[in-house]
Image (cartoon, rainbow, N blue to C red):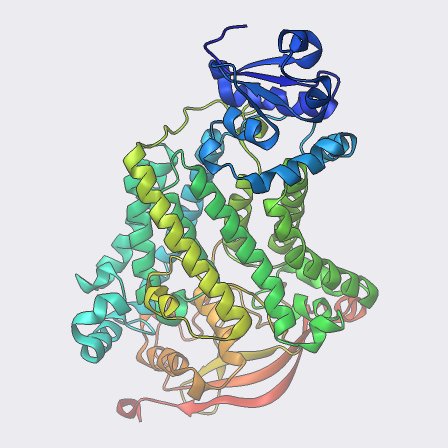
Length: 574
């Protein structure tokens, strides 16, 4: 044996030792030599047979010997982190090696590899680029009708009101490039730029710069979009996109993504219990969910027909996946991968049974980090991202501390209701957010039907592309596209028009005949002319059952609930 290198001596008959020593060899390379005590023990009479059987022994080049936990830390090059407090756990494991051998086989397998994420990161960035393209692209045909000059909530008016309210602090309250220019062409241009840059990142050009620009542009849209870009998946895309800027070659950011995935899933379950909503506690929530969710699809109707026993089982499964499985994210390899498959299956089911835009795709993309290169390298062979320089890694470490701090603060706020300053001051930038869908399950479905009239007597309904209206029209598939007006109509129906000023603006734009707003609808019953009057009626919608659908051909039942918005008109038209 060479005296210039340390020699780690282990029990060659110990299966547990062989698994971990094989792994350590891959970590240390040729810096450390390894040998079984049965082969070289006689060369070191200063070490007794009892010591060889009790613990690993590290013979240093100067002849001195370290044993137990100290030997492990020195072998792996982490001696500065060693403390005597690690010796009792080491003795516990060494004294029960058979048990820990089987535990290792179950959790890690018999072949442990150094974890690498270069290919995994490459795959994730491509998935994120596709999601960015979907998010920006879906806004191209909507953005002017939502927040353009003749849209429902003009961004120019909004920014002017913010500037008058907070003055020079306006960028901190609404971080957006639209402070520079907020015309309709600027809005559409940003959407097209987002699609183009996402395509560039997808092809592997200027990845970090492209990801940084995508983050800024989508944050700008979300900040200026008011009610129409205030959904949890908008915030999630911004947070995911922010971390991606620092991803290249960084294991720290991989762990931040795992932390984000944990918060996303666990908080979604926690808020359901914290709300004390009875439908989650008695496991009946999913018996309402499929027909009360914002935009059901055709599969939702079939799911709603299943018996109550299945709905209760499914509700319990949802709570289990959201409250228990997230902890497997931090478990050893095999257990973590099992958790990953559970989360992937869960997101696939949500995607199939409801129109939740790109939300499920984002969650699935983050699940990629529950695997590593070992799982992908046999299937995909593409250029990998190089690791960053040491100075950049230190900067990433600082970012990680900030993100973790805000994330913990967000968790504390969720569970205690306390207001924490760091959350308040960083909230406009959406780099760390709170999550939790359907904390309270809606058990009714109020639906708004918007109508126009030329004479105040004959009323004709406006048709939306995706939200329920015509009873005989099957629920439509929209995801990953998000029809944002249709979505916002669901929220408006849960309150009244006084609580939703944007809805009044929507009615005004219809009375003005705004082509941008009419473009958000499926059909204009007045063929481009502006009606003299607009009103909105409220109905209770429910899915039909199988027998009703066979008999009537309808997918929906409805019952009137009265006026949502009384007839209104423009003074100039009266």
